[in-house]
Length: 178
Image 1 (cartoon, rainbow, N blue to C red):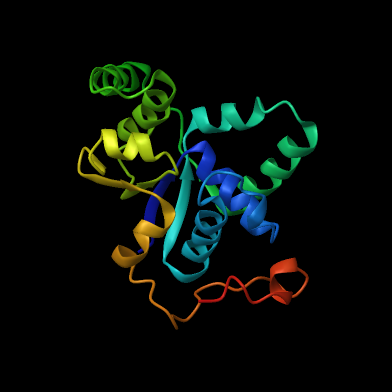
Image 2 (cartoon, helix red, strand yellow):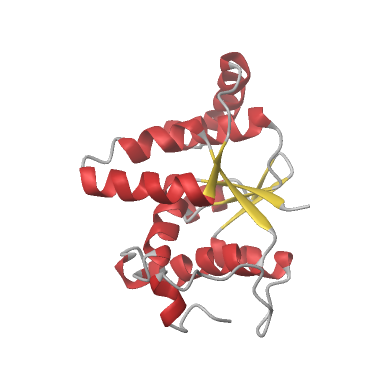
């Protein structure tokens, strides 16, 4: 059974860069390697990426219509949507998380993930959030993409579980291969 991995906005954007074969466009420190790590997780591990409702709102509010359209196309195919959760349950988790020093924005999407209750782990590129939570929240590992690899048994030479279609730009490059 596939691992349900909840994602934040930056993880979605990293996957978008990687899916376009443009991981160098990920401008954060270590962004290119983390974008490639997102892609490799999808190709080599038995995972399903789950996107909380608040992440969808943030992606839609980007401001650039081209970016929004590209993101919508990607998320429709590669990500599942976490259903809207009970507002009181989300508020309870948000309160707990903000009291632990989590920003209001992060507490919102994390509250949705925790209220949903079906995630096995969480992927984010937010090192401050990861450190602040000590690498876990309510028993769920929260880590950057490549830090999930060992736990998911993604080792050099692993066999891909998925492959890009021949018409996809990634089918013509080797950098993503492990």
